[in-house]
Image (cartoon, rainbow, N blue to C red; front, side, top):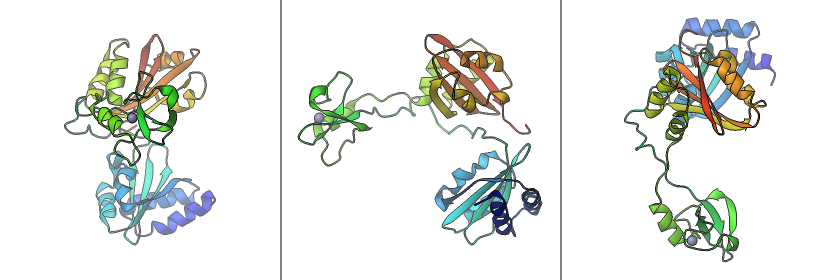
Length: 285
Ligand SMILES: [Zn+2]
């Protein structure tokens, strides 16, 4: 469907949307050729997280009313403006809402009662099949947890599933006893300890200790595709060091962390200290 017909379709669907001033602003943008993207339809149970209410800066009561309406599915359509996004919330058979959101993703409040200890994740093992068709958990010592040598089993691409029909009960018991592992926040916290001291590192460390959202963590050639994901043009502190670090040869890791009014960008390199920058993504931008 072309952009213009999406715009026409959305114009029809926001008739009656509240609040009126945001509806009118969205209608004016659509009539002057604004592109609708993305436009998704999600089950009502997933609509609230999909709207990301913490990013809404205008129209929140109307959004909450639209999200509370009895509907099977909810359409969510966005139009990007210069300094904000207008998001139409379209519940099946109920009054739609139009809200204004921050121009890019920003931090949710820290999860309550979060800690490295409470966020540890159960140990995961690769699955491997023995010739008799039983699924085992492959340990780090070159054997399954129940002691079959690696060469006698075939490795699968999924994780071992304890307690499933056809899975080895001994491996199930031993995997349940395995020590849990750190959360991604705890792992990143450990890695940035080697970065240069200062507020960029210390505020990020404090945010990770409270469960800040890691919105991106990827690895690749620094000079290549990572630049397209780094959103470097928006960095307001430490931009030059991050650009230099990404220009280095070899593979690098790139992570984004959202906390408060900030998005931190972390570049991780083998054998060299991590580099940290950040972008102000609060409101107004
Ligand atoms: Zn086993």
